[in-house]
Length: 117
Image (cartoon, rainbow, N blue to C red; front, side):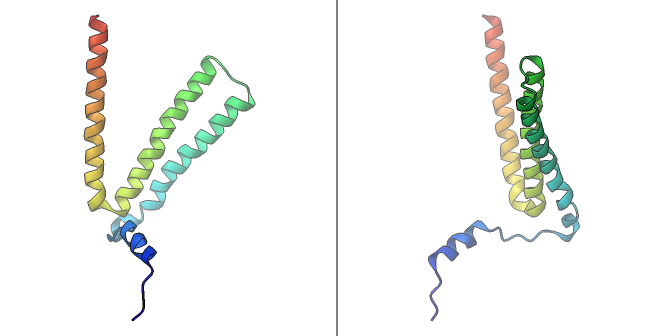
């Protein structure tokens, strides 16, 4: 009887069992480009701030754009995960949306309390 190394069990538990649907497979390369484009922009924007020694409003604008692109990278990754593993990822995405909604409501309530003072 051949002994299986213990590390194989760890690897097997990390790999999803669900196969990608042939209908969704053609969308996967396009979804990957979403995150790639955002990451490329972040790199160029950061280099622009450093290269041109920007500060003040121009640096703040570029920093805000970088922040937006950070979210785009995360959303692109979520799209890719959803295409690869739709059954398991839908619950994760729903949970994330609920958490974001609750966070936004809490921030709004805090803002309203601050404005009342």
